[in-house]
Image 1 (cartoon, rainbow, N blue to C red):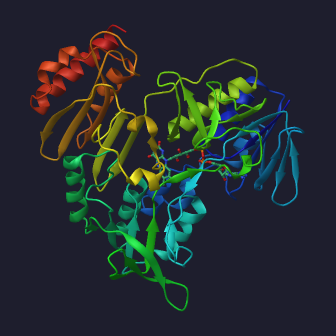
Image 2 (image 1 turned 30 degrees about the vertical axis):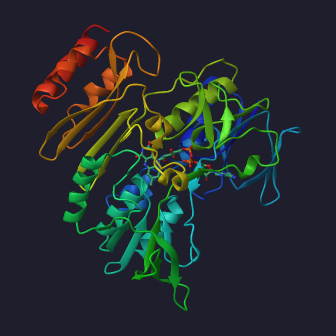
Image 3 (image 1 turned 60 degrees about the vertical axis):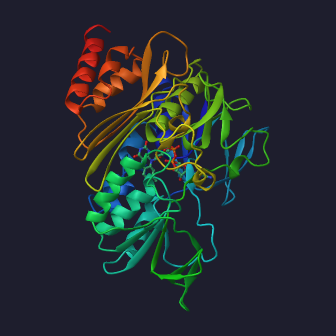
Length: 451
Ligand SMILES: Cc1cc2nc3c(=O)[nH]c(=O)nc-3n(C[C@H](O)[C@H](O)[C@H](O)COP(=O)(O)OP(=O)(O)OC[C@H]3O[C@@H](n4cnc5c(N)ncnc54)[C@H](O)[C@@H]3O)c2cc1C
């Protein structure tokens, strides 16, 4: 059997590993448009902040590919002939396949203004792009960052740590507005101010201006004013890479539509990771999940089906932990700042890196419970019945956002994942942090003790 995997990222590599576990003799080829070995894309945030050198994000060695007899081919797939089972590369080579996995991921959306091709317009997206960004981010420079999600925040933090005088433009007045409510945004903003970041709310760029050398020299704002800068960081969302499936019968919506076995509508063509939109039986919709753990789980499921099993993708509870300006933030399950608010930024943002549409799919019953003390906050989203929209008895916690102290992250994950009846917690929702925390821990311990 000849397996061809387009994409050397989390989904592609997990699929290759899983296929090898189940098919010791099959030929496995991985095609990569980027010139490196597999690397951790989330790790790029730590590269820009200087916490690790670029080579430390490399997650697989050459020997690892050799040991598993995975043939890594560098080249860009340009088109697909699904009738003759061929993939055509940009350099003219042609690769045949019996089973194909498309795991091409998503790429940053370019700045939607004139001047977006100037030298000094940077993205935190690929390893090569991050190295370019680092070359340009020199101490004493003045940088502007746009974008409403986590990647923008990571870029702001990284540039600040590199000594760039960083200005963060927000179209509205809240940080990471698809996830944070006002109080959470304020808490992070305080930390950012403390680190010297200048936050400009209700500020929107209209054009990036260059000098005679084609370098960024300023931004023209929507109000007509000019704002001097020599670096312009863009993190306004990501777009699944779908060029390859254009002019093929493979069905797409915002990404490649796949069923629970990660199969597209074309026989023996599968998709996984950021470029796939997976059928979710609970919501009855195809959802996009641009999260690292989801890419891994989808890659594994695709592989199991490619080797002949019939294994459905079981969507895990979305989980993301990050550290921004010294503040630990964990987001679990379904959480949204305001269930009624429709964020107009979403139009341009498509989907923010490391986020999940599940975060924005509101539970039927939503109520936030606050436990706030000092720099720590906890917000819970409560659903009626069992999680995932299924009706049942009692109330469940369907999502949580924890800022600051993280001791409740694991207990809450247990309660959310196991769809535990959270009724015993209801009397404590407005209690102080210690009391509510104790009850949450006790309830989660009871689940662990009596699974
Ligand atoms: C800065 C940053 C921070 C992040 N932080 C988090 C986080 O905290 N938590 C989290 O859950 N997620 C995070 N993410 C998102 C996470 O990295 C992605 O969800 C994950 O990498 C998706 O994996 P993938 O395999 O689908 O795609 P990718 O990792 O994008 O891999 C795609 C692969 O396909 C190759 N490719 C693309 N097109 C072609 C082609 N035509 N021909 C050949 N090869 C091709 C690429 O070269 C690449 O090897 C972050 C992402 C970034 C950029």
